[in-house]
Image: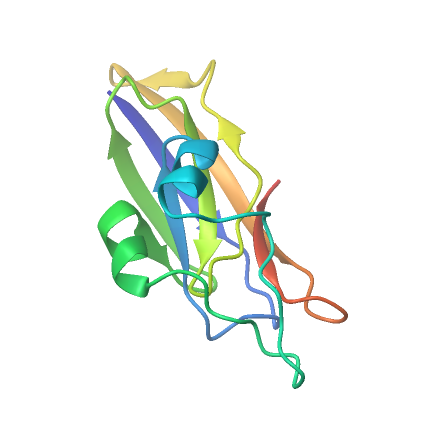
Length: 127
């Protein structure tokens, strides 16, 4: 079993918007739901254009709010994790290799921040 502990930094950009931490392959997720590119387009008023249903995100990942920390226990066959906004902007993909063993569980500490927000829509990013 693997355990990831994700801490989302407090940021003003997207402070009211939850993100979803999604275990598994980002490329497979994008192919399954017809997503092209990492960042969603935005409308004339600068708002992101929705390209994925929130029910899909809830079914495939775990919500994380601004400034929150979550713990996810994953199967050993999960090798990557990424994040999504509610509109479908995707983060970088983090490879889960070489975590430290705590009580027999391979554990990873991940720090998430928000990028964008001025000239582009904001999106999650693992540091």
